[in-house]
Image (cartoon, rainbow, N blue to C red; front, top):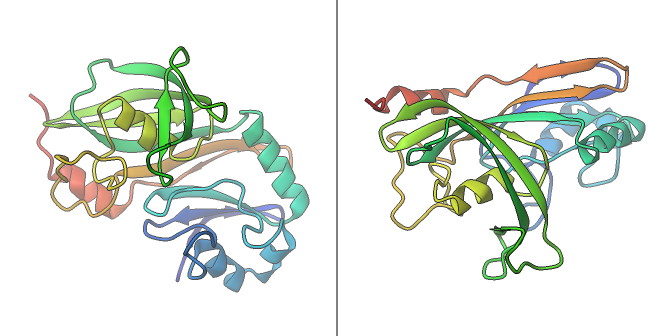
Length: 235
């Protein structure tokens, strides 16, 4: 398995994660993960953190592609994780959602917790409605990039790092991510050529252990670019 490396120095490695691969062993997935492939090529990555995550600083879902940060030492891992915890990281995604988003940009504030009906999913709650004690704040900002017939292309910035945050929030808003089998609706239809959820981690801006603030970008993969070319633009 060949993983494209966007950047590396003595402290970190930035991978361009392809869709269809789990980041590290968990649940029923025990091998053929992204960290397995990286450790095979860069054995020193075992010096960071603990098995099975090693230096993985944050997660991306199996069918989400894009920028992923990996620390090369435990010290670098702690440094990166502290920034994620303190909301010092700028994370921007590109996604295609079902339907038309009326506002050109907006901020969505909710609470999120594991769904009581389906343990694989997360559930969003308004602050004033009944919610479990485990629910945590989720802040999501978006802006419309392009309107298509039946779909909207968005740039999304997450201010918090909740599991499935973008997928859960836009499904809650009745605009699920195109191709999302878990959060999509029964009557959802995939755009032509789409074989996975249309969600791509395009950009991360973060301060590195060397003191420099860096921005890492992953171009939209060919499979998602192909889908956009076949969509009709909204008149």
